[in-house]
Structure formats: structure tokens, C-alpha cells
Length: 269
Image 1: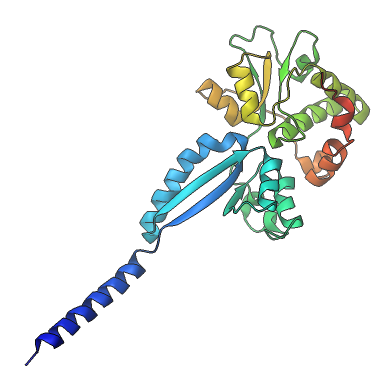
Image 2: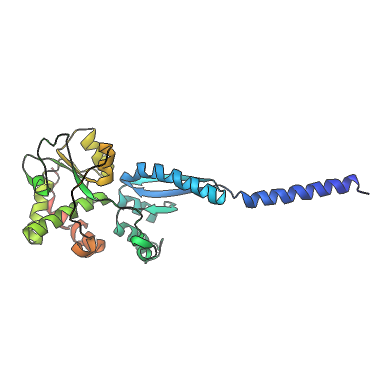
């Protein structure tokens, strides 16, 4: 005969087993922090939602993803200084390298561990003009005209700005034949820059909302955000930083270090 005490014990054991099974079937929620660069806010709003849905269906686990955005170099420094990032998505390989060099936060061979150089998405630099292109800006040469004002962020603080700077440098080097001519060209270009924002999104605001400048040097995705439609671009003559500048470490040393070529050509007005 089953006594009341035995029945209660059996029910308690059943409840404990069910509770343990539930804990296994429904893992505890987790919160992740993605420390990223300036113009990726909108991208990750959509990407995070898709990832959370996929992860929940696959594992049953609820995930909350928090975002931190700013200039790529500044974001890398924040992680090095102790910001508790779970994911780092930065604009430059050099900034990512710094996470290994300064604290060993990631393996040295991070770029070889995954396909496509650990670059899950790409963009390129485009010239964004005012509606109707009233200054008739067609190519990089137009950016050094005295009647053209250029909006671009500060390459000392912004990853996107370094892409802008190096794109202009390589254009001029290929066209005019030397680094000396390239430096002269880039100096004339930055003489046409009325303000240097600290990041790409700040420059977007300066150009689009504050109506400064005739042309904006921008990531293609940031231009897409401004235009709200795909930009039909001609075939672009692309180059790799490794081929043209010897890699990001060498480019940073020559062009963006204190006393480097950017400091030599740019004088704040």
C-alpha cells in the first residue's frame, strides 16, 4: 500500500526531475556586448534580430545583444582599457591587431582562422554629392578644386577616415607617379576640409543635416543610408592595403602616427 508520505516523496522527486529537465532544455538567458565602429548601428539592428531568432530556434536560449559604437581606434582602446566586450567588430585590421598586441584578447592569427580574412561584410569608399551634383564632381581630382569643400572624418580617430585618406593617396600615386605627388595631392584635398569629425557618423550628420560641404567621402553603406536607395556605381578600380601600403601596421606608422604624413599635411584652421 502506498502511504501519503510515499506519494508526496514520489511527487517531489518527479517535480525535481522535471525541474532539472527544464533547466537543461531551457538554458539561462545571456547578454552579449558587441563593440563596433561608427556606421554599423543600422546594420546590427537587423543582423542582431536575425541572429537572436536563429539562436533561439537552434538552442532554446534567449539572447540580448547590446551595442557600443564609436571611432574604430577609440573602440579598440576601450576594450584594451577594460570594456567587457563579448564581440569586437572593428573597421581596421590594425585596430583588431591591437587587441592581440595589447593584452592578448584575441589570437595573433585571428585573420587566418576564418574564411575571407575574418571579414564577414565589406564596403568601399564613394563620393556623395549634393542632389543634382551642382559642382559637377566626377572623380578624386575634383576634390582639390578651390571651389569644392570636402567632408571627411579625422583619420587620427576614425577607421573609415583612414580608408578615405589612403584611397585618395593611392589614386594620386597611380595617376601622378610618386608618393611625393600623392602627399601634395592629399594635402590639397585636406585643405578643402572645413571640419574633421571624430567618426564617420558625425561626418554624415555634418554633411546631411548641417548642410556643410559639397562632397562627402563615405563608406558605401553610409551613402546608402543617406540616399535610402542603392547607388548605381561604375566598375571600381580597387586595391588592397597590403599591396599598396604594406599592411595596416605600416600604413599607420607612416601616415597616422604622431608626426606622420597626415600631421605633416594637415593644419587645423
